Image (cartoon, rainbow, N blue to C red; front, side, top):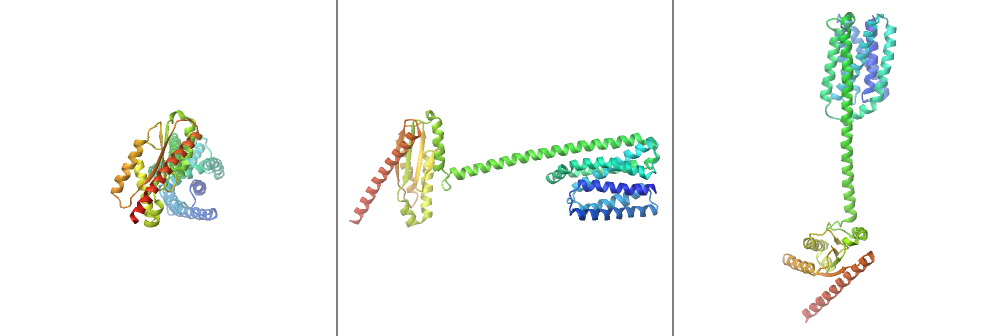
Length: 395
């Protein structure tokens, strides 16, 4: 009779341990009702097995362990190797406690048939186990959620330990009748416990490594987002050139160290007749012209990053530490001619340049203004030539 009552107590305490460690599939109320049903069903099968003549270890394995393993799987959110490892581990820790209690009673010559004594021992020892389970529960559930791989090996190890404990406890005879094997049995229980400590530390290390990789990935993503935001803020969407906002930022950088900047050549360029191209050919044609000019500037000034699109048809190039600009302007004109030879829509542009030799943002602003003045003068001359050519064509 004592075996039956103690088996019921064992099932009860082991089931609670499993419920603490597993990720619940259902609500707490439904979990409790289902757990109670599983407990009484498995215990009923166990009693039936004993009445049919099965020995205690065989009845426990066939009528308790296997049915409870299959039924408890329905309560767990995870039904893969994570469940196998959790179920076997919860049972193993419980069996270790029960085995140590039985070993203690045999060494102390306590009455192993005293169910009240066993119940008190189980209550005390399992309370300690539950406290440990509860403390690691949150972290263990996080590990189950984040770590999808590696559970197969852990599950195999836990099943091996589980089978080994069953063999030690029940064959060739119950451990209660083999007092001389208690040192070996106790050593095995302690060894299994220590192995689980190592396993848990290994899992924690895996989790920390995963979190470290996650942090690195998050930082990488944040860096990419910053670069994207920076590109959106400082880069012209169409031409991929720097924009006016970046020019303002660049001015502050110049202010910090003018010695590396001066002399500073400002070259401004404005596309002629872009509005007419948009009106007559469409905005797609106008965009194509802008991209052609941007490509020419990138080709001519391939060694500098200070190429800006300031507006719809206005561009700026800054040459740091350079006082010469005529060769660069000549290259722009030459590239425009080559480009026009390959395209139907002809492009002309007004260009102005000025060299800043004095320090200060005020001087920089003045230099920009002077370059614009030369550019507008060039545009005025172009318009005069353009209108003069039109007038002659009407004669």
